[in-house]
Length: 120
Image 1: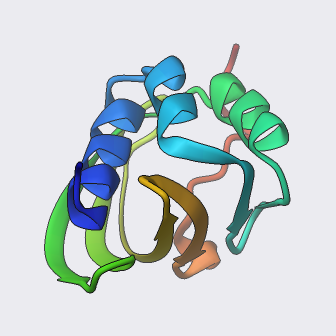
Image 2 (image 1 turned 30 degrees about the vertical axis):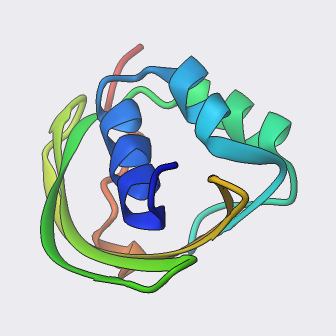
């Protein structure tokens, strides 16, 4: 059985590689997400929005704090496309039964890149 920390690491890796199916397998159906720009109360809505996300980005972990079922990750979110940005973020995870039950993301939303000048 994977630890909460291993599950969260797999989750971030799946996002970086845009492996939405793997993300789906790592979160509960009743997964909830709360962040400065978005909130979701189920996995389906969250995954739908993440599928539409056009960012090419990576997570550079600064610090991780983990207990049996909670993980806090402080990281630099480094976006390469379609805009460039480097934003310090903190995400708090609750893991239950080997899957992520909830995630709460904190960052300065004023630093989030504007997409208004990016063409599709």
